Amino acid sequence: MLLSCENSIKEVQNLTSKNEVPTQSGNDIEYIITDSTRITYRAFAPEFFEIRNPDQSYNEFQKGGKIISYKKDGTQAWQIKANFAKNYTNDNLWELRYDVEAISDDGKTINTELLYWDQAKHLIYSDQYVRITTIDNQVLEGTGFTSDEKMDKITLKKVSGEVYLDDKTQK
Image (cartoon, rainbow, N blue to C red; front, side):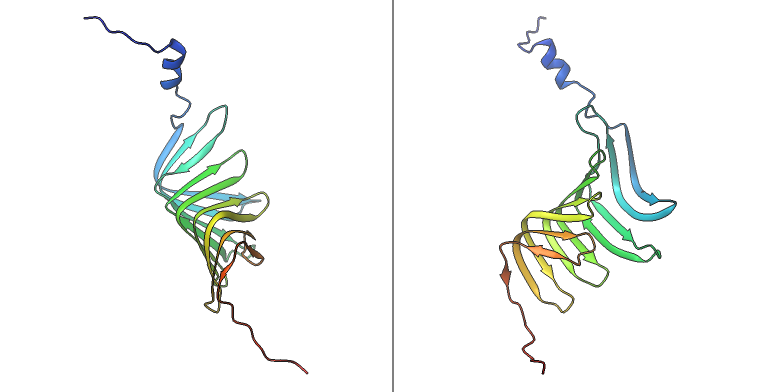
């Protein structure tokens, strides 16, 4: 029996390359990020893959998970959950996708299908549709936003929704 192949050796090597094979993997993991022995962030996921290659190294959470941030006093500052997450370790950047929900410690909620968290700059942002529910249950919608990770200073782009203003005047 004879077989014929029109692919070059280089093409075959690229297809069978181990660049995308996980160097580590695990189930039901807890990923802890510390600063001077103090826990600053914890991530939980049902599945974890660590990918290391020359172009880009990242951790992938294909079944999603949750990230919790902690204040210096150890209390919870905010949390983000998503159905898929990727942590680009060299860039300190998280990409969270599919049914993303971010909740601040005071109860503000951000819902979107795509959210980036830049750990180094302490920013979260998206260029996708976003729905923000304020602490007094006002709902704002838009396409794209940027915010500090504590969700204290949110800039919403292409805004729609109802905003209620207090019309009391002070003397």
